Amino acid sequence: MATSLLDRILQFFRSPRGKKLAANAQTRAQQLAKDPRTQQAVKKAQDRLQTAASDPRTQAKIRSFVSKLNKR
Image (cartoon, rainbow, N blue to C red; front, side, top):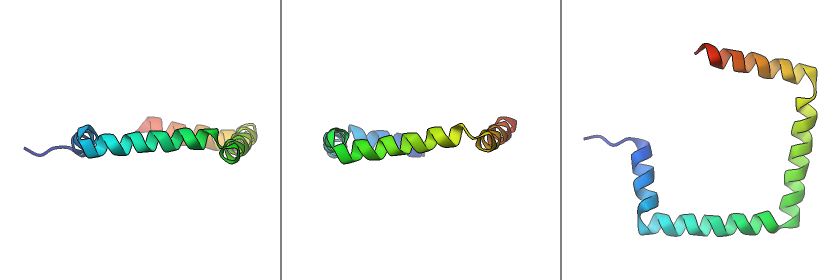
């Protein structure tokens, strides 16, 4: 029986090695979240996204992209 990629990924993360990897990633993510430089980079990215989203041309591109996705 063939297992899907998602099944194999879930199986890995249920293993001791996968659990350790997930715990390490969570710890690292928490450290990054507390880092002022990371917070500044996230704030800068948010500002850029908000600026781009308020542009009518960008909004038109997004609507066009979404409508193409909906047609699939």
